[in-house]
Length: 458
Image (tube, rainbow, N blue to C red; front, side, top):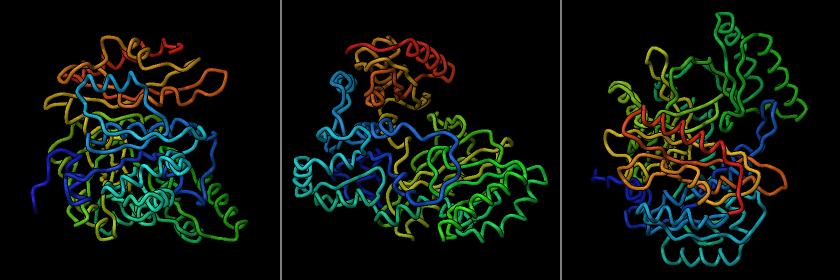
């Protein structure tokens, strides 16, 4: 096997486009999973889904994944001071292509498809040999590829959707002999009913269960069950909905709940030739099942790391056999005794951690610690990057080798603005330090400084 380039950008291009010199057009369509899950039966929602504008503003992450010979398509232009800050850090930025103003909650793909002038510019890039590299592929990204002539460096939407299902993850682990919690795939009401006696027996032994939507996203679409009564009630609800629809097809996974010491996220890249590269593993930071960030290194033993590397290779080979190539992210967990469950779910798309790789390569050297996270902001009016930088103060990272916060998405700060009242925003960044203790101290100080922000006119 030819030696792959050490840096992620060149390695990705080599594996999916055949050359490290390919020019890619990155599209960070983070909301793709919502499209994959459309039309599936869902579990009850006890809180309203929100944050659509914030999720679509996450497209700015792609600016720091692309290289200087690449292009990035965005819904809105980045803050000029923010781009200046990245330039001062010595980061060579890609060419940026911004869609004309469109509906605030529209996806980046929708905004691009609604902009004839931008479609023409992208078509010119296609004629020049550029290729489209989305966060994930749905029918919308296939339509964008067709409209512009930009070839997708990704499998068809149907393959990506199938791989992203938690049902696929569970079946792959079974076939590959990868350890996973006891559980059942339920694609019909009848399959769910067949699983009930064994599931109830686990509850009787004091275990909890979790039922997951096949296309649940970010901690939504799952329910933890701790009694036969809750299991029976959920079964009745699912069966009644299916009966009313006249279709017994469902898409759920029912599993024994596993106690854990830590969540992990690791990534492999699958080449068009079937070659699998293990990219990294990070410790995921979650709160009530919702992703909050990553800590790196993951602080695993050599044996634990080897378990994940073995699983990544087995997963990648199976994905290649099923027609998938590109980035695949896998969620795993560490048990209280140090045991590993290597496959909780597989994601057929970029991951939040994917967008940190180029920053890690440049700013997080051997022996250093980093934490990717976001800070919630409650603002009464939009703020500019200069105001946020002023609030962070001397803890804003200013150079390679330094310690502090490197902002890797500013667009999400003001994404919730639009009405007359206060709104919620998020500041995403990568914290870098020489020790875990310094990392935690910087984190706590920045959190306190940002909590005092209310808004300004910049």
